[in-house]
Image (cartoon, rainbow, N blue to C red; front, side, top):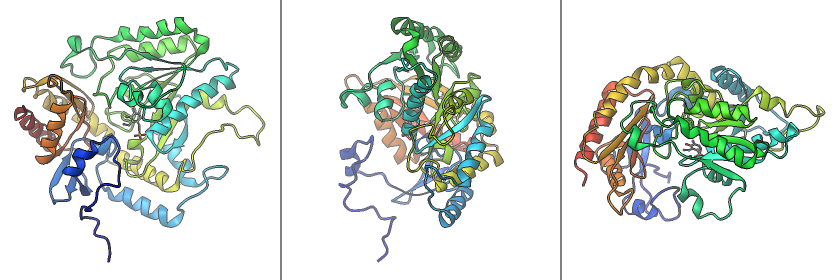
Length: 442
Ligand code: PMP
């Protein structure tokens, strides 16, 4: 008998779910069985408006026929090709299309399968780049408090989330962290980039002075920190980081796993903020979240440093079995075509003021202590219940789901990043429902 995939399985025990309150979930599971455009369908037949683009990734909305068909066609034609010493056209075509929309100066693409792998790849590239240039002492890496760079050992070492680090023993040595840029006393309820905090980038000079510039390989930051609560860079902050890294020969890596592919109303945050790093890590929106794929984008300078030895020699001892996988590449090409044909990055920019006004209409609602936004991303921060951090926002998440909207919470912060196809009426529905949820919270 064919398996009825729409039916919730009776036994949920075997699947150990990631970043999930497993015991709570398995008592009252929330199952999606289908999706279309802006909506998920739940196992009990309800429609849920997607306020988060899945996990910040389905920027073109769900089950877009062009992407589905491209995947089906590629799977039937060339399902897999060896990733090393062999090629296939789709991976090259996708790389060209990514570079077409990348900031000037970014010219090469190294494929991975996720944001976490993109981060590991970029960190390794940074160290190897300096080695290739005869500066093997440059091995130190600098991240930032409240940074999220995935879950592998490099990523949690440079990342700034204590819970993601503290259970896992010895991490990468030689890592420092810049201070985070969240200054609620000065910047609460700022629309767009906050005024205060550019000087926090000067801490990089302190770290450089402490260790010596000749020991430091790279600085990695999310241009806009997503997972720890949607923290916009203060005005002038990224420019300072760029100037200080350049001055000391340190590579600057932007982790654009969330901000890449239109989230802010430009292809990448590098263009939105007009600051171009040496490398950018991406994933998520690259394939509309549909097939796992990531990519590290690099400058010609970084790439060319590796291209010096004899021609028959491998230039980089790094890569994945699924790097540039044909089906993922086909999904990527169809995704970028969809963004372009539908003008979705421009649409995000056009909708941004409406989104901003809608979000900030929640100012004054009970428990709301800050609201932040840029492009089509936003956060509503709630006053935590004393002694029970995260409880209030989690209650909001559950109530929102019951009322038919999907939001995401991190700590006591509600984060939203809808697909870029969202309509004004759907923005009203999302924010209106969230307002109702918040007003009813304890
Ligand atoms: N970097 C950033 C900035 C992210 O937001 C994420 C995922 N939210 C990652 C890395 C990790 O990506 P993945 O879950 O695909 O490994």
